[in-house]
Image (cartoon, rainbow, N blue to C red; front, side, top):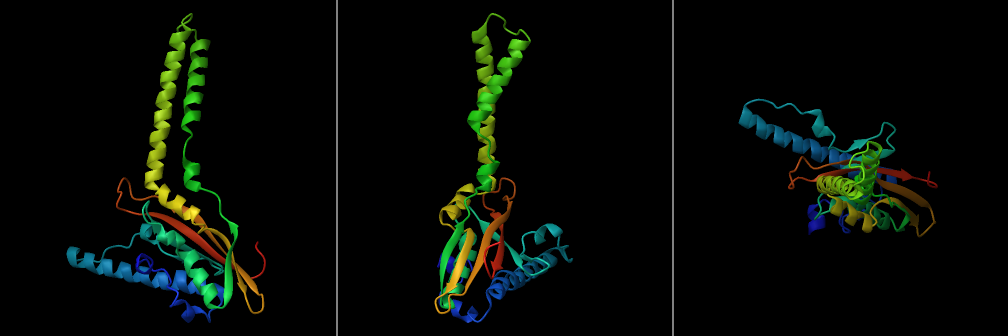
Length: 244
């Protein structure tokens, strides 16, 4: 039920897309249909605001960074997946949808090359490094300037205290990053292997195509509003022969 409400392609609906080429399925499912839904949503909101404010509100450019987009050559669709720490179904949706389309064409689906990076974890600071780095720098500074000369215990205590402050600052920074980018939800999607390069191989003639599903841009939730969603803009691209 959650998957259906989230727009995930249900197995019984997949066959109606089976006649499409892989590139056309991705474009139809994640650009054409999403673009239409986005514009319909903007139109509804605009009309509601118009009724309240008695004017036509401006559609700011910031709203459009949340819509699906397609490259000029039509090869890559960039699709916004909304997620929280508790719900990452949208992050998994491209892999689920394309797998069901692949199987509806009578082909087999497999993860060919997993995506193993964690860009959110990469934003974090190492608290232990922050502590040791601050402690060493302060210790060198005090020694070079003769501060507390002959009182190494005091030097060490001062350096240690400042190191602890830097450790706490790093932990606070990491907590803020993890909250704004819904790191637990993203990590759950990584564990579910929803990103990477996937292969679809025909069971009849052995013809193969690949699709890459990769997080291209991460957009944090608005400020400290825990009710809003983080967004990962996923880049979707089909490859007909080989993986480039």
